[in-house]
Image (cartoon, rainbow, N blue to C red; front, side, top):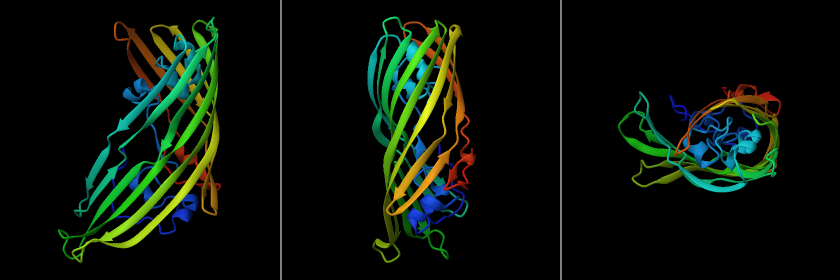
Length: 305
């Protein structure tokens, strides 16, 4: 969920400069990463992972989990292909102590993943290819404005709307050393775009009047190399570890260009397979992401872990 808003903030007028060069701007109040930086992380690639809170490092026996841990290909059984769509109906309403109302919405229907896995006949090697959104910019923020002298009187509203995604195309390979242990390697090619608009509307005259209006477009590109391992020697318990490599996202907005450097980090996963008719699983992932170490043009990003 997004962080609650505690005060009125105004997004900087120069959007390109704010997005590409600022540290902690007003947009941090609109959404954690959101429209201002690299989008909000997509939680759950693959419908089973999506339904289980985004877990997948320990493997959930579906092709899309190669996006979390490429070593899981050796545990997905025969060759398979998946195509999935997902809908995230998330809307927030926040009312502050001074009776100001805010609405945040990132509800969207989108392609969740396309993935294919082809193992060798002896099951020692697995080859895969996946396509999925990594971060998504689909976001709407609405802030209702009230009169300073008459707090119960609405005078208009501000609205921020963004759309787009950072998508990844990820080829991967895995190798099973022994029946209980496999490793995998994947390379994600990242690209995407963001359409952004901001408006302030005045209703004080009885009709809606646009006071300010800003819009922009930004493209994003980069790449990331990931490594993973899975161990099942404690069956029905399965342990997974994934190393997500450092990446540099190149962001362009008109003639303005900047780089956002994200450090490498490690994720740990545990999956317990109960088996049975419905193939029930219990999974837990721990992935501390060091956003505070991210940099924009070599300057601290100002984000929190």
